[in-house]
Amino acid sequence: MSKPSDSVALTGAAPSAATALADPQAFLASLVDGATRALSEPVAATVLLVERTRTLGDRLAGRPGDITELSLSAGGETLSLRPAARGQWSAETRRVSGGVVIARRTQTLGEWLSAFAGHVAAAAGDAAGDAAASTRALQTLGIHSAEAGVSVGEASLEADLRSLASRVSGRIPADAEAQVAQIVELLLDTAPRVRLNSETDLIVRRAATVYLPDTLRAYLALPVEWALGHVFSDGSTPPGALTAQLTVLQGAVSKLRDAAVADDANALLVNGRFLADRFAVSSLDLR
Image (cartoon, rainbow, N blue to C red; front, side, top):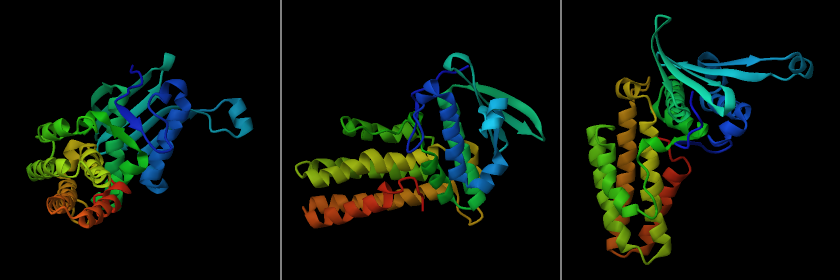
């Protein structure tokens, strides 16, 4: 059994994982709603199973009844979550082959939610046939895992940036690792140059603490084997989408650095607006 974990937060309309203790039914309903919106109803109907218990009172009142189990089947695995006694949860993932369970592992609620988000993203990408759909699904679902280990804090910006490349080493493609290292170098060079200008300082800090980490989280949330081996119907791949997004980010940050070196306030603002338009509104969209 697992207790609610602080390692995963649900954003947007969904409650936080802490709400799982206070109102398990609202928490489960939010997961069903989020996954259905992320996948679309036709796709959700093929991969999502919601089991309920309906009392006579529920039937008379036209209520759907309490959710007893939520399951998602995708990529050869079935993820199941059930509320248990005293605010605990029963969370597990089963690997299935030919209709037979060949492996089973229990998880904490936080671990299960991270896996759930990744499988929803994979299913959305498969259904749409492109990598962008995977990351749009993650954004719609609103689950962000602190376990991704790519956070860059405002108060510890320099130290967190310096350690970022090592934190993603071996977890993203080698060419993406090189891009991250280059983006970090650009940000570290740019940050002290704009420190006295509050507006441009904010732009650089957003790139460091939001745009770069969110791009990495979107990839790291995907199931590892699926991300490495999957090819969408349009020919794109998750690693290719990641490197394409990092290329855009690197180009924009490079222009920020050049503008800071030249002390060109107008160019700084223009590139800041580009970053905000491209990454802030849909920070997980690898288009």
